[in-house]
Length: 116
Image (cartoon, rainbow, N blue to C red; front, side):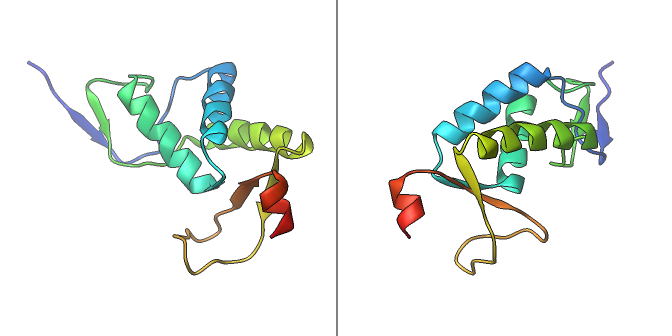
């Protein structure tokens, strides 16, 4: 008999740091700007699709939050891109985009993003 467990806790993804870095790098290539929460949601969605979640397939995670240890890894990857002058942090609130409380917005560095 197959039993499904519903879990509201953060999603324990099983990507290695290197796999996570490759996912982030590919995500950044396709975006001019993005939010930290949007990137996190993308990673959780991708992990669920690829069965890269502990407990899958018998556990259904109702949360889209990453396990806190992965936020630290994700932060290090983003800072690597900032230090490499590939991204910058856009401060302030923008009423024309969805905002999560305390979210951070990133913009890819190119001539257009620096002139506006």
